[in-house]
Length: 175
Image (cartoon, rainbow, N blue to C red; front, top):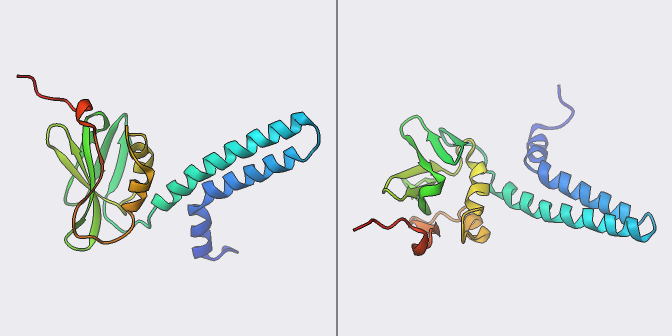
């Protein structure tokens, strides 16, 4: 028997990185007030670093949806794989050309991850492990965190391009 209600435990678990970051930032503030220039500088450095990491954790937390889609997303050595009951596949991170979000069958939002050879992978946003895609997508050249987070809002039936590899970086076929 747990002393904490299940929905509160789930919310705390979902926000654990943000809570930890804020606790470390408060520790930095406490350290800065202990007196002396050394403690002030050390506390300010700890606090600022913790606030930066808390911002990243906040964005990552908003990307974590309740798992209500079938399948599992795996990320291994620069390869994104989706293992679903009906469809699945994998794409190489180094060969990505475009990331879109679209509504499939009028009810489930999915990532459409395109590769340079034309292969595309559909991954439900609410699949198990899909929250780990945020860090990968945010590290892509020219990726915008606001565009990534905008994929979580709305039920627009049209496909929205979230990221596209710059033309200069794409592999052009040799003639």
